[in-house]
Length: 149
Image (cartoon, rainbow, N blue to C red; front, side, top):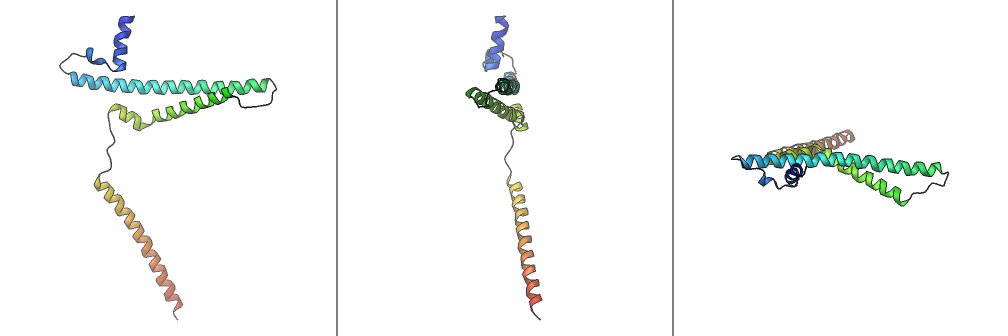
């Protein structure tokens, strides 16, 4: 069993150089890095989903136990811990499920906006402001024309 777990742990922790001794070492290392990042992302998704469910169920159970005892309802420290656990787990789950995170894990980086895109966006903004100014000028001109007899 240890003979199987040791290479697997070595692979998942990032020390896979000892396992890869082929001519295509660079390709194998990139593949190992991508698989490792995807594995980490999948573990984060599954773990945060499980912790979120556990935190929420413990929070609901503590509320139900207070209601069953016919006691006055009060927020305990344990309930706050369960609620914080749930909120943190949901936050990690949302981050892990975003497409940007998955694309980064697969090696696709989002490139910053180029100069052409920025000029185009600036051009449309300038056009919109120019149209508003021209509309305002035309309205003032029409008002002046209406006032003159």
